[in-house]
Amino acid sequence: MLRAAEVTIRLNGSTVIGPIDLDAEAASWTGVIGPNGAGKTTLLRALADLVAHDGSVAIAGVRLSELGRRAVARRVAYVPQSPARPPGMTVASYVGSGRTPHRSYLGSPGSEDAAVVRSVLAELDLEALADRAIATLSGGELQRAAIGRALAQEPDVLLLDEPTASLDLGHTQEVLRLLDRLRRARATTVITALHDLTVAGRFADRLVLLSGGRVVAEGAPDRVLRPEIIRQHYGAKVHVLTDPGGDVAVVPDTAGDLASEP
Image 1: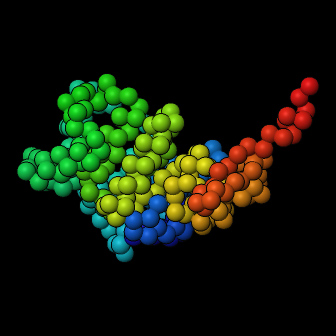
Image 2: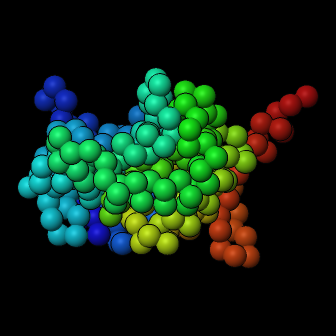
Image 3: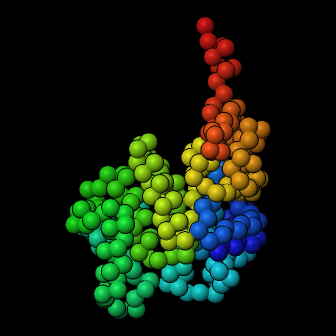
């Protein structure tokens, strides 16, 4: 569904990202991981065609560079780490703003737009919040509304930058399970930047590890989340545990610290 080839980003004459190749199949979930400053956010913005870059990004064989901004927005939706809280805007109108790429520049929302918004509000359990001001929402509610706005675009590819940042454990699980359910039901390709390696290993089909703006490891979670790889690129000693279902958990190795305690 999505293919990035030789994606490279330069700043002041220096290469900060790439060249990067990345493939994501339809309805798959790719987790982009890496230490702070590795380039995860910048890569996602390049995949959404929101930052200047060399190389190409194509959706279903169509290069985004060949499309206009509105056409790109009908194919790709991007949810930033900290969604904006537009003053005076309700949840329903916020979700409805995701329909903008499907209307003419001067067009008003039509019956199809209203039907999509109603469907998204129901799908994300936001109906009771429809008339609430965005500014009054909790972190978990805001994330659901931001995902709703993205889904209202009816994209083929959904890009999310740290969708669980600053959320507690309960809201983290709620948001990630929601994404998993929606991408299966809608056959949407999901690509997320994630800092929690255990979360990434449990939800993503495939992981891409960035370090220094380059892909240094990629593949199934059990191939990427290895103690030696994590130590090399994160500078951390960990244990990687696998449960009977095949999910992995990354646990800090504190044995040395504990041994040094009085």
